[in-house]
Amino acid sequence: MTTLHRFTLFVAASTLLLITAGGLVTSTDSGLAVPDWPNTYGYFMFSFPMSKMVGGILYEHGHRLIASTVGMLMIGLAFWISRLDDRRWVKRLAWGAVAAVVLQGTLGGITVLYFLPAPISIAHAGLAQIVFCLTVSLALFTSPGWRDETAEPVADTILARLTIATAMLVYAQILIGATMRHTGAGLAIPDFPLAFGHVIPPEWSWPIAIHFGHRVGAVVVTLAVVATASHLLTHHRHQPQLRRLAWLLIGFVASQFTLGALTVLSERQAGINTAHVATGAALLATSVLLALRVHRHRFSDAPSRARIDVLATVPTTPSLGGVR
Amino acid sequence: MDVRKSWLLVSMVALVLTVACGGGGETEAPDESAEPAAAPVDDANAGNITGTVMLEGTPPEADTIRMNSDPACREKTGNATLTEYYVVGEDGSLANVFVYVKGEGLDDRSFPVPSNAVELDQNGCQYSPHVFGIQVGQTLTVRNSDNTLHNIHATPSTNAEFNTGQPIQGMTFDREFDEVEVMVPFKCDVHSWMNAYVGVLDHPYFGVSGSGGVFEINTLPPGEYEIEAWHEILGTQTQTITVGENETVEVSFTFTVSE
Image (tube, rainbow over all chains, first blue to last red; front, side, top):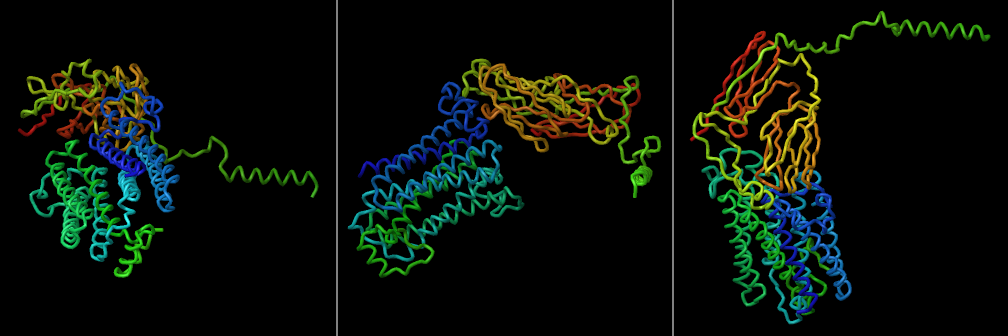
């Protein structure tokens, strides 16, 4: 394992920590505990006294400190990749991640200054997941396994489509969840597994609709994960890297479903609610990793054997294209 | 045309325009669309409202607020502060109910904005008062009496939202409300247990029930009024009353809390 890859893993882990800290801010309703931005109560961010990090400030200012650190780590990573990696598209991806982090910080500042308008807060939550996926992808692309010339290609059109669909469904579900969180609809349906004692809510409003949509989305995502994992474990169980990811997917979706139910039953207990956000991010990252692994042959740095074998057997999906 | 004729022509045109435009203050017609002058309140004839607010049923017991997330709050209060959702006396009287004149009874009048400021204090990591009233345009002074940071976050529906930090003990901050709104909630996002409410009105006829559930509304012009009582958990109740000249009308409200 190269030092660069280790550092990329560290950046990805830091990004997950940042998402967790952000989830904690929303779960504890601390988003406006620091009214100013980019300063903190008039202090330069890094000179704000630790002794004053009390109550909601601990969560909000802590989130800002972690975010700034992740931003700097990301810039360092982009420079490092630019210097060491010979693939142009990986360099571009690294700088794209830096741009996404800068945009993410700006959205975070805007949402504070404008009292957490839902569209901005939802965009902030949605972009956070993209940033995390970018760092996880960079970790994959810089891993020795990615460039393993002996890796067996995946020539399976069904799996290729299933993994893409699963990743997209998980992201859509996260966006619905973010909408629910930032419009205060987390307890719009207070009971679980039923909705007001019925399978279908007997009354409707926007909060109920978005909450119910998130529950339906959870079922759809679970089905997609089960379909992907069972297909993979049936037809590709001899490939340990894919098999591990399939079991991880199953584990994360089971945890996520349980945490979602507990979030409602505990009336949005902050710890459970935040774990739900973090596990959602882990589920998305896993589904993206799996999709990237399965679509390995589409990348320009794919082992030559994989490209020749797979491209000869798998019809090209025009919308996916190739990465060069 | 010579110069004299030119001046004559200009003078005639000016005269015609002046007459046509109705110039001249003495002949100006009264503006029908203007609002009638506000009738002043005659203190000599004014009446009063006094009353009590009671609570039926047993409310949830007040919880002790754990202020462990901020040592300054914990040390100042000893973690002995109780929630203020229901402040009930032994006789069932209910405090922190905002009672005010609602509706059209005062619409033909306007009232001067008081020059004194209303103060909202943050002391012991609690707002004091918890419920209060203010007039549109009147100064609200928010004070931080605690040795810790607070943010004053008003979340109105009609007025402009604001969120201001007060990191230093003794800081004050002035603000006014532009629109009538009952009630405007305040919260501190640093200390999630802190909340307060202000009723913003364009007249001075409001009161808040204190200990014993007693409230007073004084120097009210004689007339028929709708009176509303607002409680943060139990909602609102209204009554219609008639206040005669120099009369003191007694009004009582009874809220019910489900067991």
